[in-house]
Image 1 (cartoon, rainbow, N blue to C red):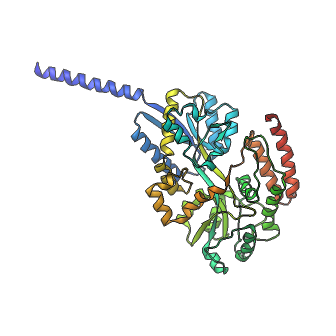
Image 2: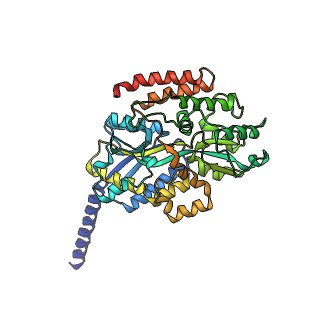
Image 3: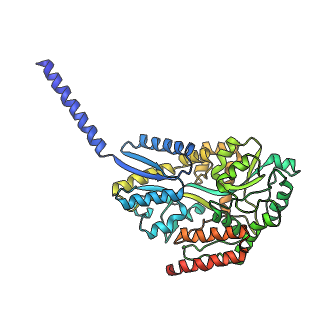
Length: 424
């Protein structure tokens, strides 16, 4: 009897534990997050590792990350999931998608579930320049994560070979042209600025350097035909047509990094998100510098923000908020910056012991952060995709000689006016 009593007790304990386990599993909040990774490999591994750490610290939340190609792919797939009845709860998407997402009533502002003073302080903890593409209408719609600026990578060995000081990269447009001529040989170009992929982004840098921005702060007007904007495109074209330091025609975004690593160009303008890869793969002494100035220094910010979708349950929003706060914490932001080259998104990230030591040992890692003081928002308007294509096409037309910069930008402005006028 005693033995059977013990067995009965054990059975009851076992069944109780099973019941609690099933109950705990049933109460677990499940999140689906779309994440843009144009190529697989290290980035996916880093994100997976961060999610695993989050789940370990938050066993009541299960996160499924769906890697969806580039930013456009991530937006298309996430919005398709919303329409199909199998929505995701959150996604990292282009920071410039903000107006399209608002217009489609797809996202919610973070103020709706920032419930505590700590939450509200967290919303204000990020670099203001990074928030320009995350805030509008007085509300916060996107939280920065995979964020970047354009920086200038240069081959110090080639500078030495050309008789230039490797610690003094070009500081002005004039110096970019004159140094570029000295760096250009029959086997390499002095400089390359990519004109495919994200030409509007590179152009935003040139415009800011010439004292101009491409749009207003509420996404309803563009300034493509302003004199300083036309001058910026003229200079970009002159680098090849007049100064001969850059190849004519299209320069591919996707292959430029490899061209730089293979010594086909002495200078490239590219995302700081390439920094860690260049650091690992460059077989030469390289430097990283802020972009050169015309009237001032300047770059647009770039990259992706976290968004929370509107079709989410209250408990899912709370869980998504916990995940985003975890991923954007100073420690995780520092880790992300060191492993990828993207910007630490808050001043607190750069005060962590790990990132402080990293930038002391590897000073190029602080260039993008320091350049934020000269940064402006990336081109973002209502009907962003259509407006951006107008500008991309205008840039291509000018750089390939099909139109003058003035004509190309004038035509783009007229078309943008027709698209945006209803929103005013």
